[in-house]
Image 1 (cartoon, rainbow, N blue to C red):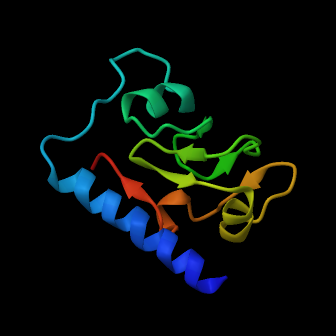
Image 2 (cartoon, helix red, strand yellow):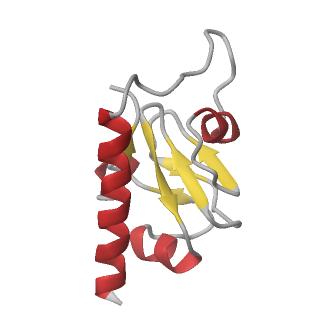
Length: 112
């Protein structure tokens, strides 16, 4: 089980490194446009079935469809399965990540 998580993290890290070195940064919402997980999912071509957003990346509703992604203003974490999600984050009625999703090893930074 631990090897599967390590392999997932390596794959995600490779995607992150590729996204940061291949050409310009990905698009951002237009000024005044409401930022949502759905919008960032589409703009950044993450292809998650369920996408949630919090500007600081610390407090989210619970993902119910997978692959699912949690977004903050600078990037995202993609979870392929429920078990991957539950291993990475303590899930209750809501997901509280005090240090933010940017602290997770599989975080993909899109903007600075």
